[in-house]
Length: 180
Image (tube, rainbow, N blue to C red):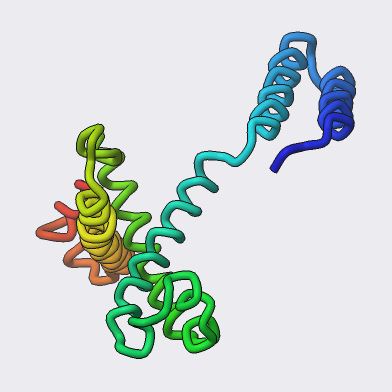
């Protein structure tokens, strides 16, 4: 989202006025620097988060379209026409499958990025290698990461809600609580 120049000036002016009114000089300078940095970031274009969401959504849509085109009815249609077809666009299962795939790719890409493996394998990566990396590796890893996160939430919930006074602080519950 790009801000109009007049809106950017207005945001900076209001931020400076609020800073002068409510903050000390040093705090006002830090606040003004943050406001100006935020305005500059807004002027640069879409954030990394929105780029990531667009990347994940478009890749999951392409993956599910690849599967849809294996159905004989959609096999003869071009990709754009199959993507606009009402049997897919008005089908809640289609959107649910894209959403589930996008969630898995998002978790998997985040996990691999945290391990410094979130980009191309090499500079001359082929299209089939890119598809395997995104559609197979990231999607499967995301499923595993989602399972681990669900299990951790269940474990923490079980530990926190443990009510037996004999088990508190002793045995396996004491060890788990100590680890957390």
